[in-house]
Image (cartoon, rainbow, N blue to C red):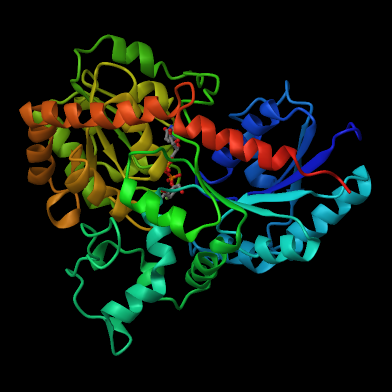
Amino acid sequence: MSTTKKAHVAAFAFPFGSHPTPLLHLVQRLAAAALDVHFSYFNTTKSNHKVLSNVNLQCYDNIRLYNVDDGVPQGHIFSGNPTETIELFIKATPHNFRKRLDEVVEETGMKATCLLTDAFLWFSVEMAEEMGIPWLAFWTAGPAAISIHMYTDVIHDKLCQNGKIQNLDQTLDFLPGLSTIHAIDLPTEILHIDTQFARLLHSMSLSVPRAAAVILNSFHGINSVVENDLKSKLQKCLNIGPFPLPSPVAPSEDPSGCLSWLDHHEAASVAYISFGTMLAPPPPEMVALSEALEKKQVPYLWSMRDNLKGHLLEGFFERTRSIGKVVQWAPQLQVLAHCSVGVFVTHSGWNSTIESVLGGVPMICRPFFGDQMINRRFVEEVWRIGVGLEGGVFTKSGVMNDLDVVLGKDGKKMRENIGRLREFAFRAVAENGSSIEDFKSLSNMVSKLHVG
Ligand code: U2F
């Protein structure tokens, strides 16, 4: 490593779902803009391995990746509880990051000049304050979701009776820009602050106002009222997205031939289905979705991990071979930008929602947890660029109906509405656009700090 760098940014990743990759993209973008700054990216071994399968760091000699302990004891036998790895990791923090950072500082002789971390890793504020350096918090989801977290205590004061929110239909009309959100859309961690993860999010919501800046993969205009409210509560709120635009990453490889398969379909005719990096609907819902596609003979491209294929009824893949394609992983950004995709059946993760907007594709939303119900509400009721499901789950008749809506004339209206959001996105990343200016201010913050 060069020891002539004048600043050293330590980036800490939350090693689950799609959290680590956007943080590394941000580090890449900053590293390209601030060549005299060194970047150390800390993540668990397993997650670093996964991230590196999609990202090429060869041309960045000012970025190094380091592994931190994932908290899993040697010889540990997992109980099968999906949250166990997250809980073990949380228990290992902050010591795992602190220990590795101290080693890196010792090895390189470069003190950290700033911590740039996933906002979930709220302990970074204490670490940074102790080290006398700023904390830059990166929030990987949308502005409404972080705003709602920051209002956790207000929501409890307003809506809780006897320690419980009684009326889940109640809207958050007492919060700026969030009047369409119902109590039922709130993340479980806000409804019940009694798990380790919920406590982590609560601590995060109390810590982010102490961050020198909170960075969002969002853009001006997508939700101005929330944006202004965040600006009034945070020291700096920097919207530097949508990520795929100002920092185009090399197009993903397409070993499964998704794009050439899409080339053979009519415009806006194909349903693209993906539930992100971690989720899958329960088997009966997968069956209902597949039956609706088959009944309507809608061409589909389904990103589905191999272990889930057995959840569908026997013969489905054979019977629909001429209209469908199933892949383990799709180059989603390019798929959504392909003109033959007419609808995105999604779990409403923030990245997927943004990518669908950029591709101009209306959505059928099946949210599961966290911010996803909030994103769904915005998609359906604020931006009007997609639909939720009746009863919130896939049923054969519900999906058939939603496919008719989105692939029919209502879908055209949704596409027009998406067009307006896309305009905001492209304006934000044009010369002197708001996301470009916010990124410059971030880059300046990072560059002006000097190794002592
Ligand atoms: C968590 O979200 P996920 O990681 O489950 O979902 P997304 O935010 O939508 O991100 C999925 C990313 O994976 C990519 C896709 C997105 O960039 O393009 N992808 C792909 O390239 N190919 C595939 O076949 C499937 C996916 C969490 F669950 C959400 O609630 C949060 O909103 C999100 C951000 O914090 O993190």
